[in-house]
Length: 391
Image (cartoon, rainbow, N blue to C red):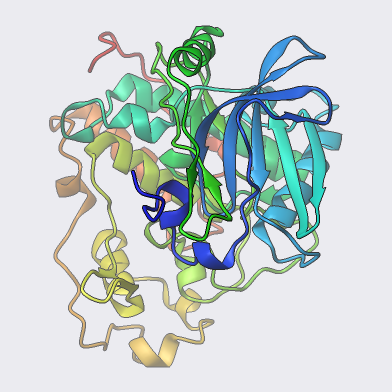
């Protein structure tokens, strides 16, 4: 491979304007965390498997890009949120078992600036990785039930105890708990037998490694992670444009004040994605690769029905897309969709009816009418027994 080839984090948009820390395999941080192999990367960090010499255990190091003191930085935001959550975690709650907290947070300083390192217990692949193993990416219902059920405990802890909303619920932000250390020993053995070769960028200033794949062992409990977009709700009014395009709650879409229910809406959208292997909403202009707001509104109306007049009247978008009676007046047509037709993994009958009722508790225009995490935990479909694990 030539030095001019770009890989992994170098291929990300705007990567040229971000400074990733040049981690080297074998390097030790804070006198205790010895880097074993690269596990992955994202827009704001790289992730590494390490050995904690003090605890005599494997650890995951999430090492951020260079940061400044801007409070809007996802890196700074995640550090602040994890510190807040760490203090609250001193009081026991079942949601703690399904939430990825930090074991250690410290700064790495060098001449060019500061980086954060977040140390966590290492886990297995993501729910998205697991989903891809099944035909048409349709995850068995028993797995979806378990994942969503446990996720709701995590959300309950975040909402009720921590006063925050995650705002970025998706299968890629849910890890599967590693049953034992065998998957990490395998990575360490692979690195020992076939050492990763660092690749230099064209200017010779950046060192990049390829990530090692984490073997998918029998999936354990889901663990909610990545708090870079988490927002404080308690005592605040949030009214800005937020959330990822395919999971955005309608109150965000309408530019209305939003709070904890945005996570519930996203969980409903994700449940359908895991079950059906396709997105409920697709408001993207793929030619220009951009989000199309009127297309999103039309799709939401197609699946959820017309929004209540008393809600959309409060929106600054009201006169642009609706008449005085709340009827859609935009040139973008409302698609003839229904949740009944979208859901194909259930035969018509009692269970499909229960599942649709469960989904409709989450996918509502009115965030005040949307079910809370604690209400959903005891839902009739979610607690319905499943005889066959692969159904």
